[in-house]
Length: 308
Image 1: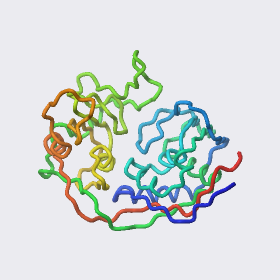
Image 2: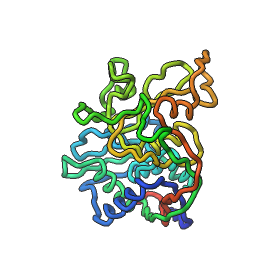
Image 3: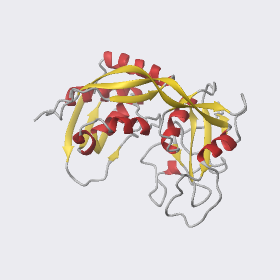
Image 4: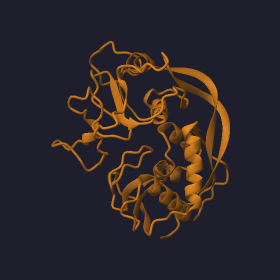
């Protein structure tokens, strides 16, 4: 039996970069980019989720040969990939979506004849696939909400752990298939001699922390807009973060802090900085509470899976 979700579902997306992304997504959808072959099937097993490409909102991506092979993910997770939803945005959507869209798991096997397809093109094809199989229809609406503006502590003076990405630096894309001898994704390890900056480029990645009671994450070759939108979930801030630094181009960063509350497994107290303290001291950035225009993704219609 099909279940239609008629009520509008509101999803917060931070400006300004996401406004352009929203317009781009609508234009791409209008072009009707589609997979040449696609299968979507429900998975009722306890199989571990996995995909041949990273399905998050970031740009980390290795050549896929035009294939998407993903197993045991929820519709919400596939929407995260298709519409570049951050963790905070997922949570906003989770509060409104029907339980089956969050809890039922699906396998997607899809292929395009374009072997050099980009990740954004795959996102557009995924949007078309979700519209076809789940009758998903969306549009965007602007709202003014409470946000944190990410600002410079001192104009044009980044901290020691925030640097402009070197134009000639080698920057390999992340592949989930590349692992250490212990079977851990190599993207979680710092680059030797690179002051703890992640090995791979294009996305926000966890890296080994300096002490047991700390968290550490960073990125290479990313925009300040992507850095800003990642802070809401990493810092457990409870509201979106928008980029107001004025910094353009691509950036590398790494930040190390003690979360509040401290991890239950921690047996030491390193006296580490708070999240906001680490932003200021290590990155030269600060958070300012304010109101700002934000784009909302509104789900107009959604149905349970149709047959292939």
